[in-house]
Length: 146
Image 1 (tube, rainbow, N blue to C red):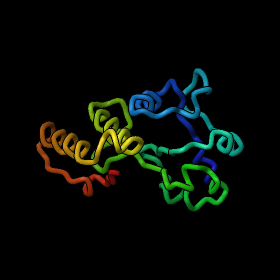
Image 2 (cartoon, rainbow, N blue to C red; image 1 turned 90 degrees about the vertical axis):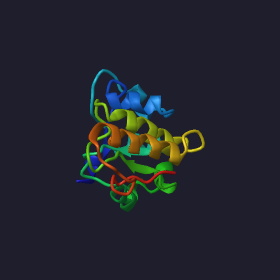
Image 3 (cartoon, rainbow, N blue to C red; image 1 turned 45 degrees about the vertical axis):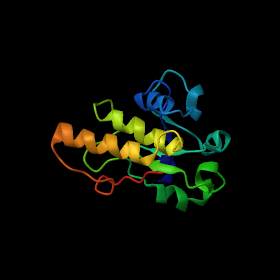
Image 4 (cartoon, rainbow, N blue to C red; image 1 turned 180 degrees about the horizontal axis):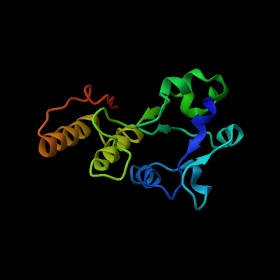
């Protein structure tokens, strides 16, 4: 069910560090010494996140969030700031070398004035070219930049 939308990372998780490093603030900062936590719908309203990030392997999409009317008053939903971590080749939101790309991608989503799209695109294309010998486009990776 849609209740699974409310599984949240905690500060103890790698993704929490990634969000902070990209200039974001984790709404679930108060959640203690654990990993995934199921947040209640009421708590989600209290958190009222400005941005919602979905794990790369999530079975939900931003469209699922926008379609669920019980969350339509959240700032992130109103402003259409729900994002799925890339990519079509490998997951960027796991502790792996590719995580460096997640950092610049997320920084662009949160602060496009500081990390413009062309900078992200440069890092991403260089990375896949250098380490995998493949040419990629943002489209082929399923990535939209700001």
